Image (cartoon, rainbow over all chains, first blue to last red; front, side):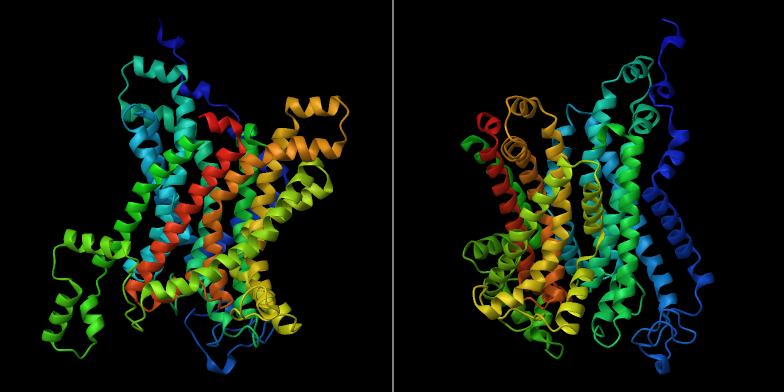
Length: 293
Length: 313
């Protein structure tokens, strides 16, 4: 058998990645969501540059100024802090929480999923039973427990959201890895004496990427939503830190006099989560047409 | 089916044990000293030591865990550090309102979601389908507290139509009924979307199945085909998926209770954590987890009951 007859991983991957962006942009909702996500990420990254003032800069003379007041297009909060500035920095905290939780939880989950699928005989059972047990705890309960242990704060929320992401990612990755494991080129790569670690990294992982990518996008939206809910409950970001859920919670006390303080952060959370959900759905349709319904 | 149920029950036991262990360890890893908190900041070391002995905190961990399990078995969850009320008493008073809120939310959200999903699947690709699907994506993206705050602001404050703080008695009394409407609309509101989406997928799957084609071929009315042959079979995955969403519902309940000052377990748990009332936090978390495990178990059994293929398994 000559080396050229061994099918390479590159051939097994559908060679359609180049057209992904084009296909995404064909769907108007997905295109809009993508543009919005890019804008939101840029705004969060550039917050210190874009923000008209300091996020902690309170001016009691302009307390609860409504949107449209001079110099305050979106008004001021209960401490007289500029809403635009607070929103930009709040977005930053919320997105970082989402990235860290999805990234850390997703990485651990993906690793466990690969291990379960690769060493199916002796690791699949124990790992997946553990994942089932972790799945029996809804994210909010994990959040409550972690906040009870470590005290309320951004760290607790990120830890809780990471933990609750692990079993979900592990299941997704295990599912797609099991399919890939049955393909001939894995057998072939094994036959030429490739090490397990290299086999997983070079051949197994790249072929499960689309599933991971779709899930991570959808999960990111959920993580933002859950994180903001935990912060709204007072278990996440603590004042005076600007975080969207915490801002909504603060504004709740002034709902009847100055509804904008609570409503504007809520609207922003809604659109960010919506954009990631729409984008995740569109990615799934584009990357994995079998899942389309 | 009995075997299946027993199997699930056996699987739930280690999970429950894990919950209890985590609940116990929660008290151990927390940096605050329970004896010190109970004694107060001005207590002398002797007093703190006496309280520590009194609470059994000077014993080895496994002894403490054994005692803790023994107390739990007797329904003793400890005493609140804040107001000295037994945790079980507070929990007993809050479980009812939480279950009431969940039931009041599901009772309208699940039928509406199933109806919307079936409609969208049947008229797949139509404007109505797109509107329903857009609504359901929006539904899973909206923060529960946003929906709650909007309802409070418009329905409660601007239009003065309904009360929006607390529970006003049992749901069958007029006041109690009025008070539960806004919380139930809030919590159910975020549940309609996922249910509609799951139902649509399931019905679409079934609509293309052979038995549906046969039903059509033998001349059944569309109504019978959809309701009896398609929806009934589609309900099996929907029940399971709804069961899996119970965690989502629980999360929503915690937030909804906080927004509407609803005297439920979720609000109790959040209050306990914020005030570092560890026994209370521990008790609420254990009860919420155990309830969640129980519901999952029930869904599993119900699933077996709905799907004859599962009974043999």
